[in-house]
Image 1: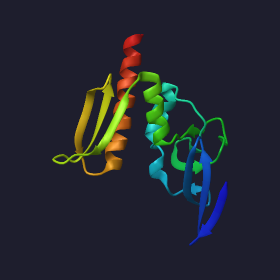
Image 2: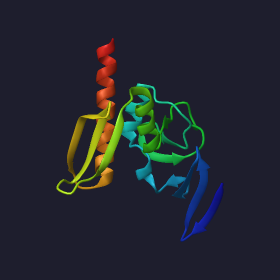
Image 3: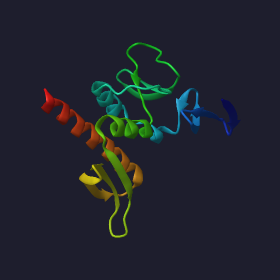
Image 4: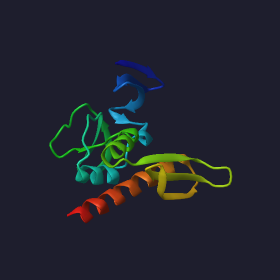
Amino acid sequence: MNVSMYGGLEYLQFLYFGLLLTLKYQNNKIIMKKEFVTYEQALALKELGVGFPYIAWYLPNNPMLILHPAPMTTMDIPAPLKQQVFRWFREKYDWYLDLGHGERVDFYYAILKNSEPFEWRNDYSTYEEAENACIDKLIEIAKQQDHDRR
């Protein structure tokens, strides 16, 4: 792990499951928040039983993201990286994603099963907006599928 200072910000660089991550943070608050799921998504994913090693947590009833290798209380909500969430849905449900920008469409997401899209939307103005909408839709579909199994 390498920590460096520049302009009053700390940059933490480390190898995490084969990925070299660089996080900007100040006073233990992550500035590169867009790499992590939102507070609402974290709550829903916890309910679905998503579990793997985390590097960040949300405080209970507080959307502030805290960089810490372990929860500080038993009530902290794990905040996975978006790429971890996409991998989890791929491994658990066999759902694959396509996120991008088309020639005649805005940013889009497509959720694929057996190489065929079964859910897609293409009306997002940014990649990050499409990425978050895709996670929301994956959560919604997983909750419905799990509910239907009962």
